[in-house]
Length: 192
Image (cartoon, rainbow, N blue to C red; front, top):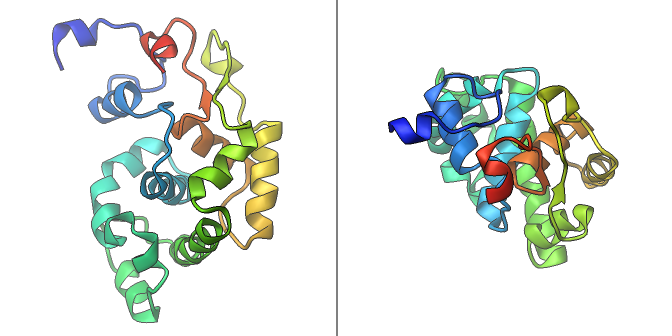
């Protein structure tokens, strides 16, 4: 990382971890409208449940290989044989419930695409099609859930999605740029 970038004021949560800094500086909070990328973040946020985000980011490329480059059409066709293979893959989170949920979520994702024309059209309805901008001054100001994440979670669960509690949905909203939770003194706050 160059000296100029190292000296930038950013949210404190990436710490000095280069992977977390790169994610913060280039992806987190950037509005996403690509269905494949939205599915990737949904998969990764579900896998994160109960874990540190840096663990997930460090395993991201392993997840990409194990889960067919985050292609929901391919994942939706995974069989018991693939599940057992994934359970032996030390490069990912080997939690059977999360693996099975990912496969089910891929199936439900495809149904939503068919119903709404795209997952993007469906998911952004929870924020009225635009980014919600918070004015958080410190990490403690950033909420863990919101009315929007509550509504998203309820609707996703009703459609058969798994590992989509309100906290996971809120983290997804942050990652997908549906919410700008960069602290106001972070250089990315105005950029996104």
